[in-house]
Length: 111
Figure (tube, rainbow, N blue to C red):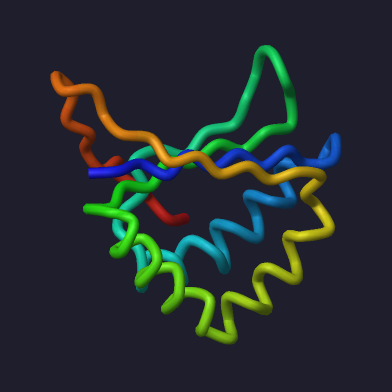
């Protein structure tokens, strides 16, 4: 398994706007194409205005396949157009779990 660790640094004061778009539009679309996220966080101490999310895949091929399907959905392009003005910087890392750790999908509740 691999983990994609994504960090978005938002413009100050834009975290709630991001979450509003994400909960209403982004997450429901992602859940049609991607597995459940392993985690979704915002920072409270240290570098602020960051959104950090973790996604698990069997391998890089599965990740690429899922992301290609997501990017082909016109609703996703529309959503990305809404959140891009909120984002200052994006970073994506690929992580592999330590041999003694087995990641598990998180539980999400949509309002």
